[in-house]
Length: 167
Image 1 (spheres, rainbow, N blue to C red):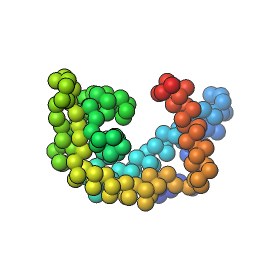
Image 2 (tube, rainbow, N blue to C red):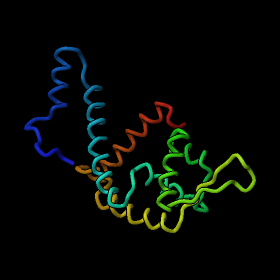
Image 3 (spheres, one colour):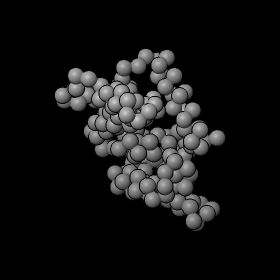
Image 4 (cartoon, rainbow, N blue to C red):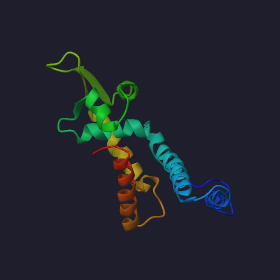
């Protein structure tokens, strides 16, 4: 989502030129700064698409995870692992989804220490309509063709793997 008053120059490119002149090689700084700015743009676009559906991206991801599960339910600890979130964050997400009647929380049938989250029919419907809203805007990722999007995914996955995000 562009700002209301776009600058007549690229401020990240300008910063990279100054960095190069005053500090040293600027390629990594420029790449990271671009990623951070793109993240802000994507977040703004995704938030705007999900807001009418009463969802945040974290809650949307939780609904999608449950839809993708075999039985529409998962233990909360597994949700945290798959979403790569701290247990407290998962609890907050599930609390909000449950308050909106999009999921139900029940005890595990054989392990009293485990809580299972199950998506409701209302949750499935909300996930479907929110998915249409997100795909209609290509999740906010604009300006790239299909090959460039695939290349970007490969490059970012490489960074995540190198950082130990997954093996």
